[in-house]
Image (cartoon, rainbow, N blue to C red; front, side, top):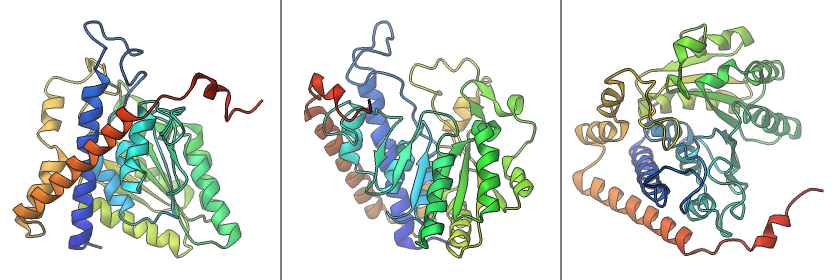
Length: 328
């Protein structure tokens, strides 16, 4: 399964939007946090987890999804949210804690929810797997179309929720796809130090489902693997698992000194940045012209600039709003 030209352009543009958005957020996040770094200061307080380098995982999968399909993501969610069609203006406002945000500024960047496109994420490791399986079960019991996709990191494959949800998805033959973004680091712990198996796609066999490994952070290869798994789920043939070799180009969070990385690793990964690599591939194969590239880059910048302006110009919620939308 190969993406068509229009799909390649869509994938490339979503990767650009994600990268430009995070570059803008990264710069703004540091406002007011110097000379001594204080996570609570500035227009974007709290932790910030960037997904730069992992953009291929999102576009390769979400290119096959509609708004009615369900996606649950991790604490590193921006690339997936953008590829799933979450409103960028409201997403930016949510990250800024503004009242025009997706949840009125209550959730922040790790808790983005957009029911219009069936997207959610969580800061808890493996937390999105149960809701994805539940959504898939709901679709099956109601006889409704649609698939669920649960994105998770390689560290989440060692959580109890991973094994519980894979087992139930297989027992009930649910239309769900589990996508592991393997960036080799669980915060500061290397995968080889925490996981008994070299690759998690092999674990799928223990639950009677196909497991696929996609090397090289390749958006086209991810597209092919995801297309097969999602088509299988739509045909009613049950769940699948995909593990993607990807790269986290920044630290675990903003302010991470990254002292745990071996010398030269970060520089080597940055030399394999998937966005310029994808651009080169598209140009060489004639799927993209220089003029088209310029238009896509400009459109991505304009979209991000508009979202940041919207977020900055929006008002903060009134103090009494903290008492709203709470269960007592």
